[in-house]
Length: 333
Ligand code: TRP
Ligand code: SF4
Image 1 (cartoon, rainbow, N blue to C red):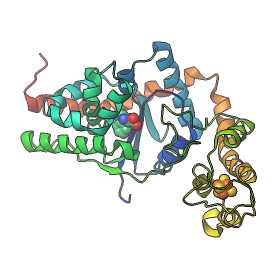
Image 2 (image 1 turned 180 degrees about the horizontal axis):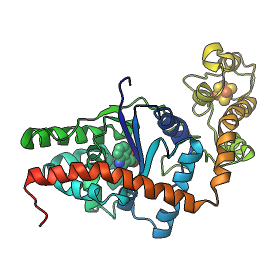
Image 3 (image 1 turned 90 degrees about the vertical axis):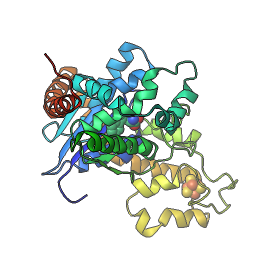
Image 4 (image 1 turned 180 degrees about the vertical axis):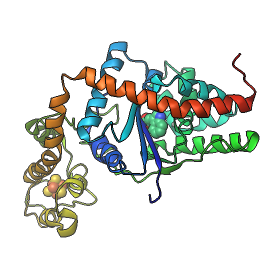
């Protein structure tokens, strides 16, 4: 990323942020807040409705996630922070875009297959149009740069081809967004990607250090072939949930490989290794948790941020939507 960008990313309000989101996504979002960039970060509450939860839960999660964002360093003075539903033009744009989107492509998209696998009793239309709504999120404010996890890549590709199709048919309207796929993958306690909804494998960023330590000690899968502390371990290939997190959080490890070498020569046991890992995690999370605690009772402040963010996002998206409406022949009388 070199020139000035319109950075945009969304997150569904399905639960709280976990340490994987924090390291892999939110810390990047914070870095993009530089002079020249316009950053838009939103809570995809409409996308959340595809896997309907209780209304109270949705309302509550949304506010809590914004508190996490702010405590992690997203600055409402530098970034536009909003709820997707605060900008009704996104839904309108989604409807227009859906007219240019062949159904077959939507049924082949991996996240579609994934969602119906997880919710076989609720294959609703919202799940089918999920990527089109994402395209509206991205194309509405003319985002140039979209940081997402690997699983979202096909959705971004769909947004790019929708934009191209529209531009070819109706003239230059949308900016074709670039994506960043290099978000760090943080393994969860079972070694698979942290935060997979069916696995209890995540580290809650608001947990106190002792709780995080206990979770790693009890559930963190290490090198399964290392039966005794005197057996040499394989940190790179066989250690499933600990070593790759050391590379992300333990200062100097990537340069010195101190822990990796101690593991391979059986000079460190997995329990001590986990203690050291949690030292690194706690060092990152403690300043965040202090800021987060300050916000715990400040729901009104968060609502104010969302209100102001919604107004700013709406100005950008309204303009594109009105252009699209016009080009497609829709007139508001
Ligand atoms: N589908 C994304 C996810 O589950 C969230 C999302 C919605 C999004 N709209 C977006 C991400 C637009 C990037 C851009 O993670
Ligand atoms: Fe993994 Fe550390 Fe155990 Fe080695 S010592 S297997 S890196 S937990």
